Length: 289
Ligand SMILES: [Zn+2]
Image (cartoon, rainbow, N blue to C red; front, side):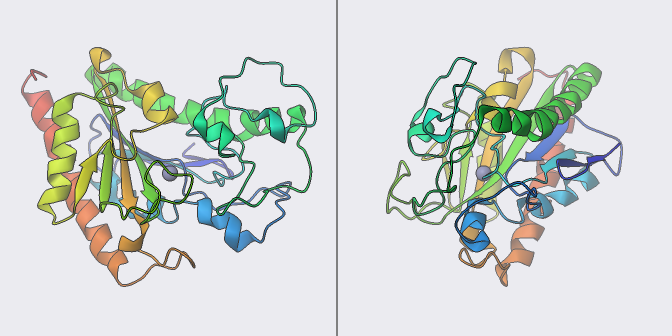
């Protein structure tokens, strides 16, 4: 199976597989029928990392695997911890332990409470059973598929490199860690060096810079749940987050790709090929750092 209806789709390597895995958790655009958000769909869609899965799909051509989420992150966010449930959103009690974060208080935890701009996402409270159902039907299968792919590559090669793919608004909003600041074209995150070997983080950043883009590392995005969960450099599991500025490829308001889309897609193809060269080089070198 290379897809689970409405939940995830996997793009398998078109050539011999290498231990390089991409995932796009926020580009899903299949809205579940019971997602009774109050604001108009256009506003809710501002949460999407629109087109990111498609922009990286050619990575399969260099031997990598891509897993993309098909559901919207505003319904349930795969890049949040299961302990990040907002009690203010619920009509009844949550049985599991909670570890609330700044994202929770901002209303963008596991299940979002607000849309872009801060308006409430729902006209009602959600039941704990509804949130549990979203975890079981969407969140857990997405994580399980990504973990299965990463584990299979790690088992076969003894090492795996994971690139967690996102896109970001060009300017931080009031809730961001950098409100009002124009961002670099790319932000690479490894949670301050804890989820990936330094050499790969550096290689990704240098590859982006070589293509003519501005790039920063861990500023303002360090990476959240997916790299935290899968990045264990001491086990040979390396995870980095790559954020791309949305205005490079689309109109941020309408989500329509603009003339820059084709150039970015071609540049990501070049980048994916160089990451594959890095991986093959490390394998050939006996994994010595
Ligand atoms: Zn994202």
